[in-house]
Image 1: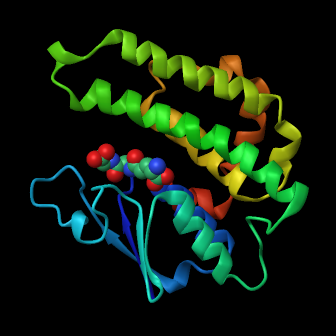
Image 2 (image 1 turned 120 degrees about the horizontal axis):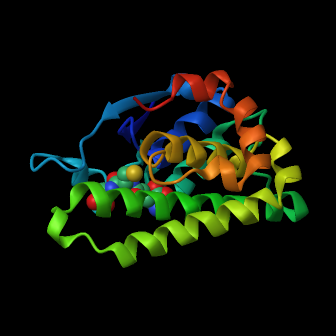
Length: 200
Ligand SMILES: N[C@@H](CCC(=O)N[C@@H](CS)C(=O)NCC(=O)O)C(=O)O
């Protein structure tokens, strides 16, 4: 049994959970709810960086969503959501990099705007993150064909867009800028793995 340190609102955790669901391995993962922002948190015992996700396994502990997904994918006999090699792997890595980077920028935006005392919030920093998100959405829009495959690239894109809806709907009308992605996401969001892991 693996143990996943998780928080329901984290898009990085969601990515790991959706990949595990799609790989048919979710029932081998125990979810351990973790509040990384609490003074009492013990997350450092599993991740010295103080972040979720962290995946504790009999082969050691993996920190960071990519490493967690890579390990889970390796455990799955049938479904390969991260291709081993060649063009298929490069394509997934390219899409994943864009979606994961947009996710980082979105989380940075949310932390700056929600967790900082108002007087310290720096608008220039928020604008910079919003610019990264918009540019990454444009790049993903140009790779729509790649998103038709179910893999780490499309899963990360779906979880990133879900996070934009969850936290940044009021400040960022992403559908207006990326209608192709909006159409793709309308279907992707209906996958049982996505419905089950939706943030509240
Ligand atoms: N690159 C990391 C990012 C993980 C991350 O930023 N997690 C956030 C929650 S969404 C967190 O735990 N933040 C706590 C902190 O920054 O101290 C990954 O891929 O997992």
